[in-house]
Amino acid sequence: MPTNLLDAYWNLCLVNESSLESAEKLTDAHMDGGKNGYSFGVKQFDLKTNEEAGALLADILDQFVGSAGSALKPDDVAKVRGDALKLSAGDVDASADLKALVARINATLALSGAKTLLHEKTRGVMEGEVKATLSQIEEFGDAVSGASFFKQGLFGPLFLLDYKNFFGNSIETLTKFVAGDTVTLNNGINVVKASDPFVLTDLMHYILSTKQGSGSGKTGRADVLRRISNIVREVRNDGALPLTTVDVTWLTTILDGILNGQANQFIVSQKQAKTYHDLIDLIETAKGMA
Image (cartoon, rainbow, N blue to C red; front, side, top):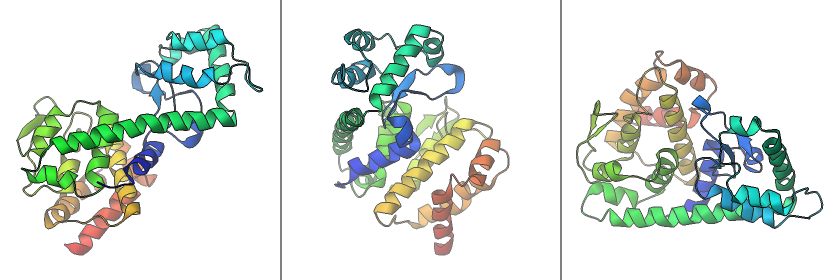
């Protein structure tokens, strides 16, 4: 297993979930539907949806009550620990008291020591996720090529970490796919089966066949492509990303067609913004091998 997986995951979360600036304070991600709460950290722990986020934030803030530059009081920390901020960001903003609490929290998180502690705590959580993911990969066994693929380099483990970060921790269907089974995705609309031997574009095909990754007019597909491109960037920064003939064919036909299509305005605009630079560069590499 790659020894730099934690660093790669940290870097990936920084580009996928937050900037360093937004990671160091409570922010509203303004997700579609306004269902999100205020979030913080490189991992963007959402105070509304993440059951552990409130306690994690309270543990950090508790260390700085009474410190110079912080107006926090013990009662403020108790409110955070008691899930006073376990609301949508809009509901928090609608309360003058809670909005003022957010302001006091952000003033505290701006302290150098608080930033350091926040990153330490976040990295500790992410280290636990890495260990759990590596254990899941070990449980794939060695009987099928998909399991072997995940044990050969950085792409498979990093993909799995980001997949769980995006979709949640359930990987039952993905596990079947890795094992070589035919699986149905997007409410039964898409039927997919991995290559034999398993290759990296099998994972791209899989995630683009999910409900979020499907559809010519959806923002979800554009965002999934962004995440794939960021994984490619991180892996290639670590070294070469070997391509098989199956990869070359899929990249230069299927994926090239998706990125050059005009039906999805969100993909078009993201491409113009060079969001998919690393994915496009991989396709160009594949074209040179075709």
